[in-house]
Length: 383
Image 1 (cartoon, rainbow, N blue to C red):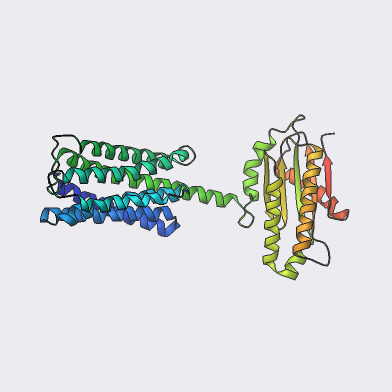
Image 2 (spheres, rainbow, N blue to C red; image 1 turned 120 degrees about the horizontal axis):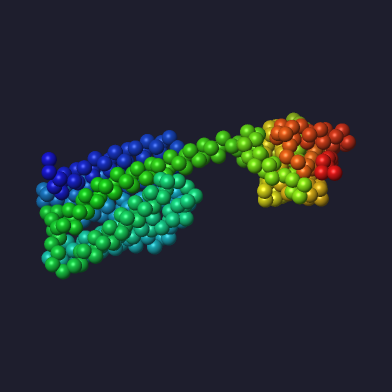
C-alpha cells in the first residue's frame, strides 16, 4: 500500500490512539497529572487526524479548519503536561492562541487561504512545542535520559513547524489543504508520524523514571517524619564517617523523648504523631551541612555530624531540648514534663561500624536518662 497522505493520516490515527491509551493506563496506576494531559493530547490528535480524512469526502470545514484546530489544542495539552511535570505555572496569555485560531474564520476564501491557514497553524503549534522544550531545559541533567530526549524531540518538532510556517510564505509554492497537495504537507505528514512515536516514547520514559525515583525516595524515608529511616542511614553513613579524622571530628547524637507515652495516653496517638513530626522539623531546622538525620523507630532519633566540635554538639543538643520542651509544654501539658534526653559521642577516628557507634551513643543516652532526663550527656573520645 503506497504511503499517500490518507495512508499517513491513518497511521497517525492508530499511533496516536495507542499512545493515548497507554498513557491513560499509566495515569490510572500512578495518578500523575502530566500523564493525563499527555494522554488527552494524543487523544485529540487521534480525533483531529480522523477528521482530517473527511476532507477527501468534501467536508472541508471539519476536515481542515476544525482538524487543524485540534492539532493546536493537542500541542497545548502537551505544554500543560510539561508545565505540570516541571511544576511551572503558565500565563493566561496562552489563551490568546485560541483567539488567533478563531480569527481564521475571518480569512476570505481564495488562492491564499491555504497558505494563511498553514502559516497560522504552524506558528501556534511551534509556539506551544518550543515553550514545552524550554520548560524542560533546567531538568536536563537532574532528571533522566527520557526527560532530555523529550526536550530535544519537542525542540526538533517545534523547529520543524517554524520551518513549515516559513515555507508557507515562499512565493510560488503550491499548497492545497483540501487535496493534501504540496511538498511541505507531504513532509509534514511523515514528520508527524515520527514525532508521535518519539514524543510518546519520551513521555513514557520520563514518567517511568520519576515513578522509580519516587519509589526509591519513599523506601529511604520514614513515612511519618520524612527523615531517613535506619536502612537509608546505614547506606549513607559510611561516606560521612570515612572523612572523620583528628582535624575533622565526627559526632553522633542519639535523641529520645522522655515520658512520650503520657502524650499518647492522654491525647491519643495522633497527638503523639504530631509531636514526632514537630521534633523532626526542629531537627531539620538546626541540621548543619555535611550531616545526616534519621528516625530509628518509635520516639528515637539520631543525628550524625561531620567536622564537629564539642561546643557545636552541646549547643545543637541544648537548642533542640529547649525548643522541644517549650512546644510540648504548650501543646500537650502532662503531669510529668515531656522532654528530650540526648546521648552524644564525639570521635576523631572512623568507628568500626554504624551499629557500634549507635551502641556507644546509647550508653551516653542511658547516662542522660539516669541523671534525671531533659539533659545532654557527651562522651568526648578525641581526648
